[in-house]
Image 1 (tube, helix red, strand yellow):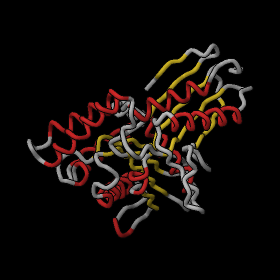
Image 2: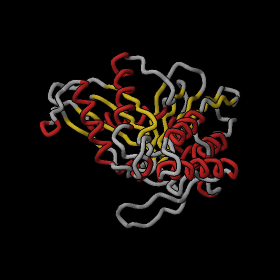
Image 3: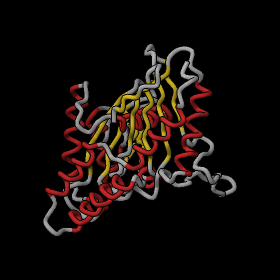
Length: 294
């Protein structure tokens, strides 16, 4: 199954799209932020520069940012497909994309400090596999920049210093604290991707998966939908602004998921994504037909 389809070519195109083209709703959110900032302010100038950068990257198929990030991938596959082959093909696609300069050779051997030279390394790309009942493949990817990764945070509730208990009000308090601690680092305005619950590992993984959601969607859980909207408003009232220059546009979106937990633990994990909210999604049918979803 899929033996006659050049998955490496499709995966390379997936990387190109993610690296060089932002989803339309992200661009519109940046443009909307630009329009509410004070005329001539540093915040407005920063967003003007970002918008110019986005246009230039799209016109030339060049990376949106010099930090092309870690490819984090979720692949849904049908029964009978080799996950080993999928991993090999996607890793080769990252090498090709690096050679084509859609990605920077970004992978470093942690012990030696040497660049691997081809954009791949241990856990780069980082791939999650999920078997499903569909006949084709669905491949979803984000490119997660290092600067924004550095300002992600994980809290364990209760947090007495923030007077944050084990409830959604406690979640609200620690999320806003994470934004304050970031202070525009991580290339604001950003997107907050949050997981409530899980353990330390699953919570980080599930928070990153929230970045696959469209900025314009509505959380199917009413209380989380309400909290997303409230946090978006309150984070933008902090006055941190683009790149920390001050202003009304600190956060472009807030997306919250949740996992169940054991009684001893109540984690809240905040993955921060920079303004380059890069993602791409493709479905591949059994004949090799492609449907681009983002």
